[in-house]
Each structure stands twice: as C-alpha cells, then as structure tokens.
Image (cartoon, rainbow, N blue to C red; front, top):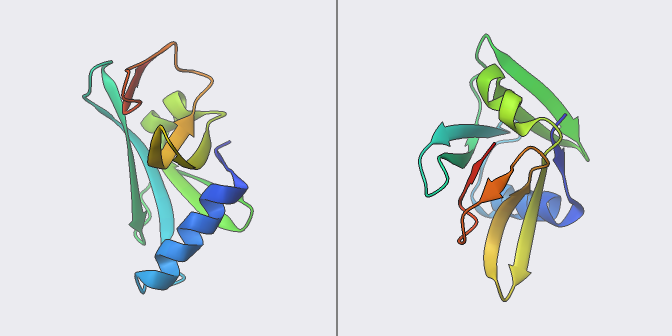
Length: 108
C-alpha cells in the first residue's frame, strides 16, 4: 500500500485546481535509478494506465505505481513539507536504509 498524508492530499488538490488538471488524472509514483544514494523518487500526474500498474487510493487520491517501483515503495507515505528544511513533496519510506543529505535519493 502507498499512503498520502493530509497535507500532501491538500497540496495535490491545490495543484489540480491551479493547474487545470482533469479529475481523471491520477498521481503516478515511481522509483528510478540516480541520485547520491542510487534510487530517486519520481512523481507526476498521469492518465494512462499500464499493464503492471498497482493502484491504491487513500483519502480520495488515486496513487499508481508500476510493479517494480512498488517493491521499493510498499508501506511508503507521500508527505508535503512547508518547513525550514525545504518546501515540497517527500517520501516517508520504511524500506529505505539510507537517504542522501538533500533527501532526493535513497538506498534499500
């Protein structure tokens, strides 16, 4: 399962409203190679499903990931920060054993 915090849900809804993104678009979460620690998160709005997609819904937000990425993301919560350490989405991933200093990449 992939979850979303209340503040991240609010931010996704703001982005949809301000960016004129249609209701049929969902949030695609994936993991790609790169970054200081080896793996990087990718987050996009998408409306095209793929054969190996894993689909979750939390707090009314549809979150979709491919099967390979799900192996790294199982149990992860998408969060949003407005704090001094930076503004933006971040992932609370219980599978990550190491994160880089900037928080953009991780290792398992």
